[in-house]
Image (cartoon, rainbow, N blue to C red; front, side):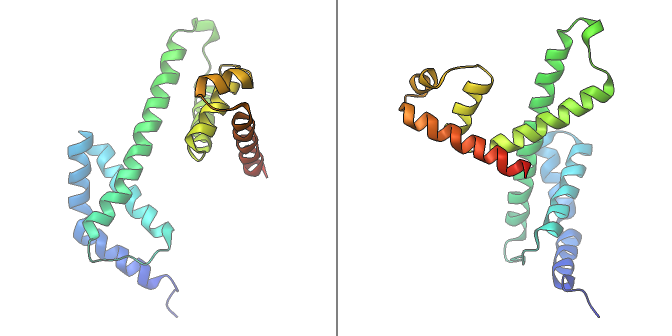
Length: 168
């Protein structure tokens, strides 16, 4: 008996056969790196397999570039976060530098926190970061963001609620 996902897999297989090379070339031109382009092209098709969406094959390249652009943006954000962390580590005395295992764990945690924050609306994220990273009081945050104290309190409640939901 065929799988329920057989039509989806067949559609993705056809997309892969007809457009994988094109997508990889498109990514390579934007990234300037053959290996990263190959990885992101593969990730694009993997994402499609996990989406369980029925594909609209009328504009397959537009669909593939939309998915690939999202993955590429995520990749650039990860690279930026990793560079910032490695730059901070470079300024540490050697005896305080974390082990490779600790570096990996910290980077994974940073990526998880970044993903969590990315799901928050911009003013909520800004208020949360000002409170947690800069240690600002709510009044100072309200002044910095140009909003009311009540808005900052709502933003912080929303951010904390979001954190708690993810912990459940």
